[in-house]
Amino acid sequence: MTYRMPRDPSAPRVAVWRRLQALGVAQLGDGLVALPADARTREHFDWIAEQVRQAGGTAGLWLSQPASFAQERELATGMAADRAREYQDVTAAAHAAAALDAPERAKIVKRLRAELRRIGRRDYFPPRERDDAHTAVTGLATAELHAHTTNTGRQP
Image (cartoon, rainbow, N blue to C red; front, side, top):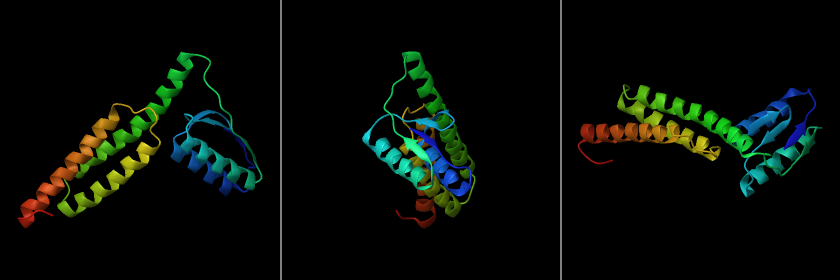
């Protein structure tokens, strides 16, 4: 997708940028972003392009492909690295939460599961850190379940 927006007011430009980040786009250049082509990403790009136009900007959707396998791998590797950092943050948060009391751990498990779902929606090229994050959150949830069972003497 290509897009161009007026500098002022900045709120619509920031809103578009945040939506693009939430989708996990690859930033190819100023006003040029890419995602793997599928119905879901096309629909999101259609909505964002309309948002850009409503803010007085211009937007275009393009179907393209890298000219070489090396370019394709570079793009996929960059997108995977972005997700890997997010998964590492989740893993670190899960490990840090292990030392907290049971009610706090339960809140963190819920928040981290939601974060894993958000990351998963923009994870087009899953890195190995994905499994680590899921394992860490599952381990934290299992510890939480064990603590609840031990403290109450019954299953939740």
